[in-house]
Every structure is written in C-alpha cells, then in structure tokens.
Image 1 (cartoon, rainbow over the protein chains, first blue to last red):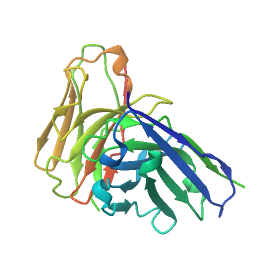
Image 2: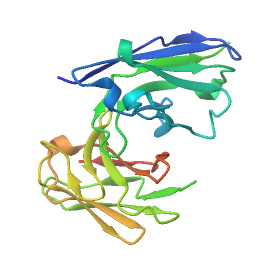
Image 3: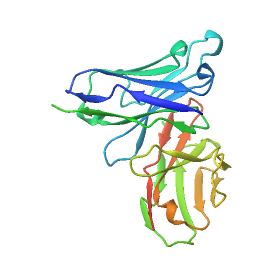
Image 4: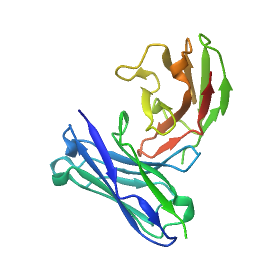
Length: 120
Length: 107
C-alpha cells in the first residue's frame, strides 16, 4: 500500500524557517517524482514545488512556484525514502496545509498534510 | 506560466443531474490536465488525468474531455457522495503544475 506521511509542521514567526519531511512507503521511491502542494485556510490548492526522480543517480529536475522561489528548497533522500521542503523567510501568507504528492502526470497519491502557521 | 480559468466557482444541483465544469488554459497544454475531487479536511483525490483517462477505481459517471485549450469535466448522474470541491490542474512540458480556482458542488 502506498503511503505518504508528512511531518514538521507547526507555528512559526514571520521570517523564521521550518523543514517539512514526507516519508514514503509501499513503492520504489527513487523511481518517482514528488511534489509539494499547499492549501491556505479556506482557499484553493497551490502547487509549490516538484522534484524529479533520479534513477541511476542522475540529478533531479527541480521546479518552484514563483511565490516561493528563492525562499523554499526541495530535496530528496532516496536512502530514507523521503522528500523535504526547507522553508526560509516565512511570511504570513505561507500559512497553509502542505501536502506531498507522488508523480508527474498521474498524481494519484497524497499525504494527509502538515499544517504550517506563520504568525507573530 | 500557464494560467487555468475554472468555471463556475460553485454550483447547486440535484441527485441525478448532469453536472459540467470547465477549465480554460491560457496556452496550449496538450492533454496535460487532471481533475481532482476534494472533501473538507481531506487530501485531493485524482479522478481523471491526461484530460480523459479515468484513474483506477473511479466511477464511470465521471468523465473528462478536451477541445483545444478548453477542458470539460462531467458528472453524468450526480450522487450524494459527489458533494465536494473539484479542481483542474495542468502540468506543462516543464512539469510546473497549476491548479484552477476550484468548483464547489452542492447537492
């Protein structure tokens, strides 16, 4: 069974940093690209970042939404079946539930989400 | 970046009705479009990908169609459990994904 479990969310002051983790199980993690998607309270879905698979040790392709470029960094550790989102210079409008999700065309598996609240 | 215009933002329909939601892409995205269903407090659920391919286990009353840069999502016979918010999502050649604004379906 495919499972994605996010962790690392919490309350952080504006300007602070937070690192989200997503641990995957039930599939060959290194073969799949991964995404981070967020949803602000009462709002729609916003894609945040994509990291490609790196089969054979190739460098992963990485993309960011303009709203987080330069502040957020996505990475993966295939040995730990994990993908990470390092979030720096957090702003109040980064407050959201952050989901990790597997795949590029067929994004069929999602985690339950981690709540990040940026507030003073 | 490609923008997705989704309409309507909300609708109310009755059980058994045919419901249609549209998304218009600001540029050619080929068939690179998915449709998701999201219920409150839950992660999105993939219903359709590549514009018209039904994901595994998704009921056949859900369908998707492409006409140029316009995409249509249809529920052929609305069921009580279909009350949710539906989103389109495009994934262009550089795999930057963009969501539409969502359509809340009330029954």
